[in-house]
Every structure is written in C-alpha cells, then in structure tokens.
Length: 445
Ligand code: NDP
Ligand code: 2IT
Image (cartoon, rainbow, N blue to C red; front, side, top):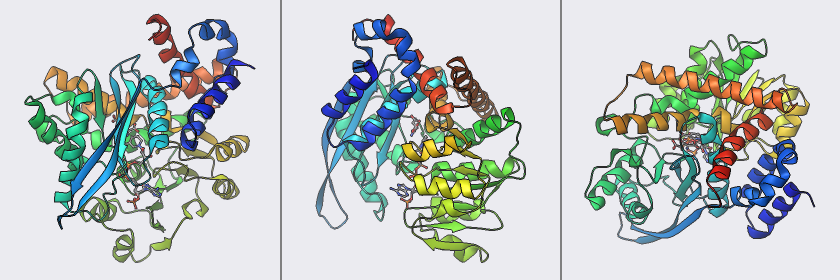
C-alpha cells in the first residue's frame, strides 16, 4: 500500500468514531500526494506521517461547576497539543455542546498547518469543553471558566501553550480565564493567553483580525484572478466574532454583505447587513437574530438553514464545521457564485469543496483564509514579550501584509506542484513543508 493510504487507514483504525478528525486528515493527506511521492523514503524512515497525524499530547479533565440555583454540573474539558515543532502550541478554546475529542483533534490538526502558514513561530493546539454558554448568567460563565482554568493552568504557559478564543469564547471568557490563571499561579504572565482586554495586555485589532484578515485575503485572491470586491454581493454565515468583522470589512472594501446566520436561523437584508444593529443584537444583548429584523424592517428572517440559497458573487462561511454541504455548493454555483473563502474551520464538506473546485469557483480553505486571528494572536505575544503595545494601524497593516503573504505562499506552492489555482492543495503543501522540515531537523520526537 502506498504511504498516504497506509496512514489514512491507520488514522481511521486508531481514532474510531471521530469523523471530523478523519475528514481533516483526508483533506490534508490527499493534497500531499505529490510531495510524499517525491520524498517517500525519507519520510517513511522517520515515520513522519505517523507522527504528524498523532497529537503530541491529549489532556482531558472534569470541569465541575455550580449554577445560580446551587445545582452542580459536570462538563468535559480538553486541550490537544498537536504539534510543537515550530513553536509553543497555539490555538483557541471552544465552548459549545458539540465539542468532543474528534472536534478537538480536527481543530488542533488544522491549526498546526494554519499556524505554519502565518510565518510566525507557533505550533498547533486547541481546547475547549462541551459546556453550553447559551442562557448562562455572567456568574455561571465565570465559575465555569475558573473551574476550567483550575485544571488547564498546569499545561499552559507563554513558552508552552497559549490558548485564545474560538466559538463561545470571547473577551468576557478570556478575562475570567486570565484572572483565575494569574491568581492560582501567583504570577503575572501576560503572554499565557491571547485575545485579552486592552487594559491588561491585549492587542488592538485582535477582535477584528479574523474577519478583516479573511477579507484582505479574499481581495488579494480576486485581484490575482483579474477581479475585485468592489460592487460584489457577499453572503456570510454566522453572526459571531468572525462573521461580524468580515461583514464590516466587506463594506469598507466596496462589497455588499447581505446575509448572516446563527444556529436557529438566517437573515437576508436587501439593503446590506447593518453592522451597528448586528453588534447591538449579538455583542451587546447576546440575543437571537430575530431581534435584528425588528430593527430593520426590510430584512427577512428565515428559520433553519438556507443562507446559501441567496444569490451572491462571493460566499464566506463563518459559523462552524460542515455548514456548507453538497446541495449548498450546487445552489451557490447555480446562482452565479464564483468565490468561496472559509472564515470558519472546515465549514465546507469534502464533496462540496470538490464540486465548487470542479465548477471553477475560486476556493480558499480556512487554514489560509481565517489565519488572520491567530496571526494577530502571534503579534499579541510579541507585544507581551516586549512589554509594549502597537497602534491599531500598525497591527492592521501587519495583518494585511501577513494575509497577502499567505495568499502568495499558497498560490506559489500550488503552482510549483502543477496544481495552479488549487488553493486547498497549495495551503496544505506550504503549511506541511515547514512543519515537516522542522520535524526532520529535530530528530525522532
Ligand atoms: P462565535 O462564538 O463568536 O460565533 C459563532 C457563530 O456561529 C454564531 O453565530 C453561532 O450561532 C454560529 N454557530 C456556532 N455553532 C453552530 C452550529 N453548530 N450550527 C450553526 N451555527 C453555529 O465564534 P467565532 O466567530 O469566533 O467562530 C466562528 C468560526 O470561525 C469557527 O469555526 C471558529 O473555529 C473559526 N475561527 C475563529 C477565529 C477567531 O479568532 N475567533 C479564528 C479562526 C477561525 P449561535 O450563537 O446561535 O450558536
Ligand atoms: O481557529 C483559530 O485560528 C482560532 N480560534 C484563533 C486561535 C488563536 O490562538 O488566536
């Protein structure tokens, strides 16, 4: 059997019942065929693919907490430290009822290649819990975060593993996590978390970074394909951190974002999504999107799925994994969509990705397109080590430069391996080569 098929079988056998992890590994390994063919003997000898598909460490722990009525609850806590070859493990924490070991492994595996693409010295990690923050009071969120950190603190550190936000973890949660870490460590280690508040070591532009970065990369991709964002209609899914700032930057770059969605429904606003209303509903009130349409009489609210049935030129999935399936891809193509860039991690299923690529849609995978968030996290770490802070404009300019750089790195890797325009292959190959090189140089570890 060839090396790639052997590893795919190995991953399937060793990780039963983990479909998201299998999906992520499949996507990466399939892209690597030409690279592995060239180097098979060298990689086999040092079990490189076995090691790169096996996390260095998986930490699982109990998270007990007490609700406002005095009732105790228990959730599962995770941190997967997937690959530390090029820097301290780095990646977000997700709080969502769908979190399980498969989701944690897929996210930390993807993060390894994403972080490599940023050009910054960061390894891949991810963590979180199946705790559902919806409907919880601030006090309940705080107690949960403190209990979670009581276990996690032993495994993290500014040179070891640096968590940040992801779904369900924003400024409020990072604040509670940081406060508790500082208390139990008895030491102020600013660089142990990123996405911190501006008053205690956070970086300007981190909040905006993933959404803005997604648009910077999309703009560059379109430019290099003889197109421009100006005047285009954009469909966005999600209504959280990534979606909100993607919508904001789409407007700035001359496009018109017309949709957003959450886990219960989606909104079509023919006048374009109003960013101030969206922020008021989601960031301030933490309410449902039904509140958005109350403030915008021309907008329509639809229950359930369906955001990809809207006529658009560009689609930006910014909610969660496997939210853009084959039928959605068909609807997008039928409606004339010619560009899909992933703001979320693995939002597009494998068959949908193939359909989009075969239909000539410009498709950029999340590990390149949403790398702006972790890039500015890397810049936050730099500022923390230097004990200084850069202006919004300085960070935003660096973010722009990094995203343009990522696009060209990905584009060039695809060209070099004879797959021009296949940005999935380009991203996987470019991300892989740096990590693989570091692993080869560091011996069997
Ligand atoms: P948020 O928690 O801020 O927002 C998530 C959004 O997605 C919400 O609108 C949420 O709706 C919706 N959503 C979440 N889970 C589901 C689900 N199972 N089905 C339908 N809708 C869902 O998270 P972020 O914006 O930070 O993250 C969005 C995506 O971007 C994730 O894939 C994340 O991994 C990725 N990402 C995030 C980065 C960051 O810096 N934050 C960086 C790079 C990638 P509801 O509120 O109703 O649950
Ligand atoms: O998926 C991601 O890249 C993130 N959630 C951001 C991770 C980070 O460390 O900023």
